[in-house]
Image (cartoon, rainbow, N blue to C red; front, side, top):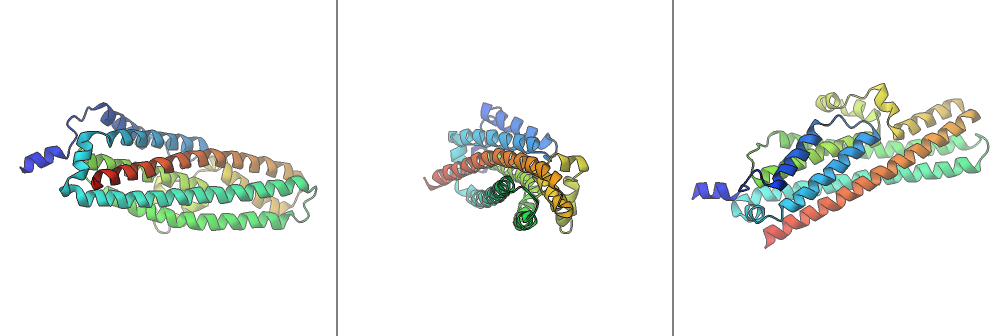
Length: 276
């Protein structure tokens, strides 16, 4: 009877097309380079959306539903559901951070277009930078929560059953969200995180090239430079950097919103399975 339970919790064929697609996407996301640019973060978000689309197909398989509804898997399923709530909360944090930064960016752009000198602009720029500090503080807390989830995954084994597959998907989702949050926060996030996690710092060493390719960080750095110089010649450069930042944010917003919807759908599917 014990051997029957062991088989019932596994996919009948590990070579099922959906399982193969999940394996391939997982490996691609794991092996991809550190997401330190808007392009690389966007690619990871797109890959993650594909992964969760395959998970949705996986959950439609009778053998997957049988495994998740089995009483012996109740605790593991509850842990996955708890994890999904955490991921949804982190996604909400990322969405709020992007929205707040975008709104401040748009407001500052509007002010810059209306004014012809630098008089009075310093106070407006400081408001933007203050808002960014609040965003970074919130992101730092979210990164710590993700790190706790990551530590939990390091203790999980991989035995090929549907529960293990879902845990691997969760672990990769955590990694991509870490990259996204670190990108939104900018290079400064790394120095703060190093105080509580040396491993996190080693995983995402930010170079000068990384900073150049981070449109949000570029805009912030340009604004800090503007405050120091208050040179009217810098206004055009500030406007350009803010425009680049806004476009970057809009792209990331689309990606995180799509992921958020897929996470909700996956959670609902699992709840429907276990409650049947």
